[in-house]
Length: 190
Image (cartoon, rainbow, N blue to C red; front, side):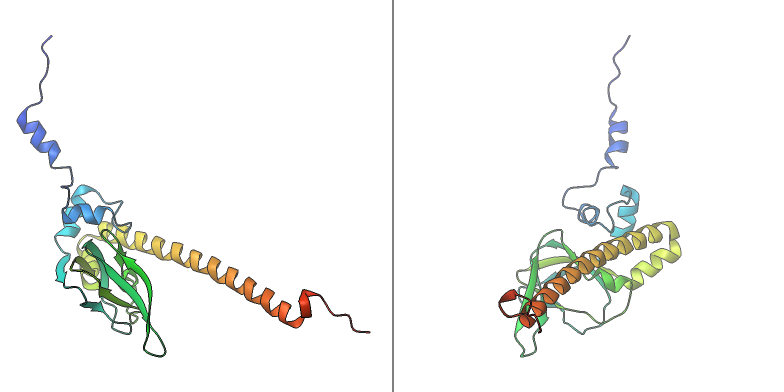
């Protein structure tokens, strides 16, 4: 029996299924909203996203700006912060390669809830609300897959926020109860 060798043509056909390292498709594949997409679907999304370069210190958006879409960090660092009452900003997190932010803007047009400013030179991939709507219109199955994953991400964050809020409320209730009781002991009224 002759040994079958891999032909160059078969190798080329199957190698097209692999996502190139460092490509837009690879970056997208690591984002939960796009993680369940096939290679072909990733290529379709990669064809409509917008790559942008930012310098260190340059804002991506400010708190209160209209929410237009989400960003994925291909390379660099972005600080997410809240404007304080006395104009001092509170940094919430520094995001790096592969992280994403602003995804809620794909689902609703509310103003941005925080500032996003580049801490280093950045390459960002933007996926905007009109892009998603066009995708839903032209490729409903693909658009729906993305929207469902976005809804899942938002639901997970909401559950986490609810848990944290409940924990904080319980701590506040305990502190208020301790304030009413000197030395933590209940006073008896005669």
